[in-house]
Length: 133
Image (cartoon, rainbow, N blue to C red):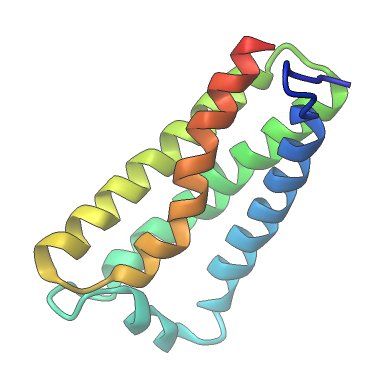
């Protein structure tokens, strides 16, 4: 177990979170294939829906993939955990600030910013705590 000073099993909690997050990202991305009209919910009216389609491959492959690789490295005790957690954290922060900036500027597109907020808040904390173990 990787218990911190508060008795928190960060490894187990982070592995569960990364698993659920990866499944959610893949499910979210794949929902647009049979229902492309869902893009209108996430994309502000001033932007073309193609904007979202440009992000889907990156979300599915890099963001979902880095979360899965971080989880796998974490559970197998690999030294690459920090690299994958750092990549994953950087990606969610970039995406969150980008979408939040658009929502603040245009007053639309809040759903994406709200959906990403838990990961954008948790991942930097988890990365920081991981370095302190």
